[in-house]
Length: 340
Image (cartoon, rainbow, N blue to C red):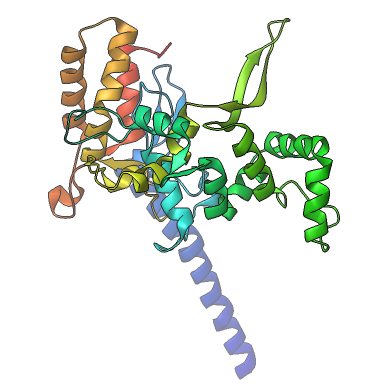
């Protein structure tokens, strides 16, 4: 009798728990959310000028063109299903390399005869001179100092591996000599030959590096090939750190930290107002060129737009002002139209 009574009480308690926890409580939260916070409750979805959903105000997405503000770097490649940090320690050279590559194309001189100018052209000129710390063959030195980066360059893209494999086929004697010195690798991969390849490439292509180049064929179809180059974003980014070590006395502008460091989630949708203002010249000059308007007037407009859309958490009690990248870029699109 007691067992039957205990069982019936347990069933009643379970029924009440299911109804309250799985029915009434979720329904109550849904009603409160949809009535008081419908925007947040539905994912903080943002819509473009045509009314279509273009993203969420809670999740960063990449912007790469000059017309728009760029978000923080993302270790998760802005993939909401793979939220993660890079987990790289401050002592890890991969972190230094990633930050240096981000800095190379846009960092500027702070003082001296070139104050306010980009260092990128000087990085290219230094690279073309092909001397690092008074020694020739920058690319060979880069590969020797950073073996992991050299191998990573080869494995990062199938076209890179194919280029090295083609080189190996045309240099059988050099490869055979390497195999003789490394008897445990009778069939070396492209990555195995990284040091050998870059030494040979640097010797025969001084002041050059390899990069993907888009070519247009006779049938008007474009195709990408890997070719030696002497200038461009790859030179500016990959070799900025070596240039900086060769020019320690140069005074450069300090960069907002969130321009070159990823967030813990890799999906932070905000950047600091300082970050946005640092990008302001690039964004405003591009829109001015697109719309054929006065650069100074347009810069003032976009700066005012930034100030209007900047806010500090908890009314300024927790940190400085931040800007939602997707929101501000949608406002630029709405005001100035689609970029060409």
